[in-house]
Length: 70
Image (tube, rainbow, N blue to C red; front, side, top):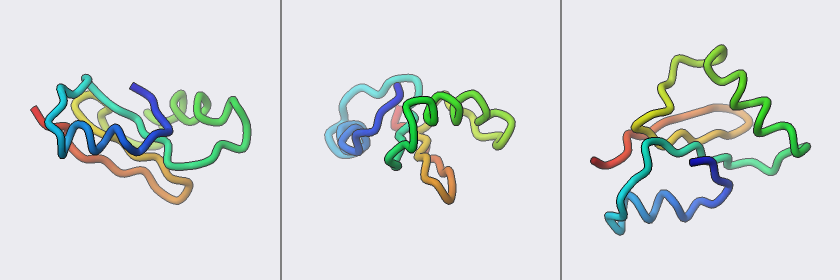
């Protein structure tokens, strides 16, 4: 799941909603419509972070992850 909405984290961690296989949360305002897609395409080159089973938070300065609840 790809989202710009921070409420998804609350659903899965605080309200015990069933989690998808992975979430990429863009915590940025994109400079263009293409920017998020370009980031996703180059993510494997920039990082060894697995996208499955994790909430991946994308910020301009960094990318971080937290395991999704099982």
